[in-house]
Image (cartoon, rainbow, N blue to C red; front, side):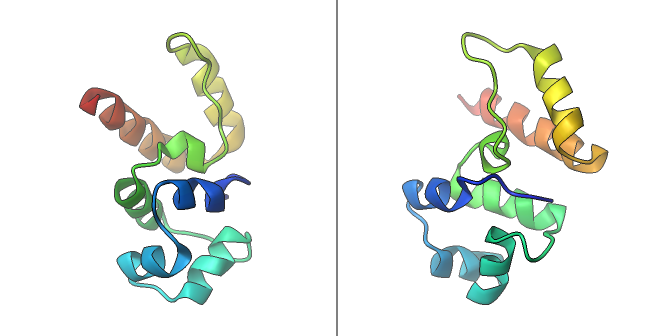
Length: 103
C-alpha cells in the first residue's frame, strides 16, 4: 500500500511524530521511515492502526481527495479503483464510513 505524499505532514498536524507513531504500531522508527519513503510495503492492519491512532481520514493518508460539497460516491469509487487494490479499497470504504458516522 502506498501512502500519499503528504503523509508525514498529516500525521504531524494530528499531533504525532515518527517516534510516537512507530511505538504505537509496535515497530521501529526505521520501519516507519521506510513506509513513509515508499521503501517498504505496509500491511492493511498497520494502515488501520495508523488511521485509528492519528484520526486522519484514510483517504487523506493515501493522497486521495474526495469531492467537496457532499459525497459523490461514483467519483470516489472510481478514484479508489484506480488508486489502490481491492482489499485496501474495501478497508478504506469501511474506515471512511465509520469516520463519517462518528461525526
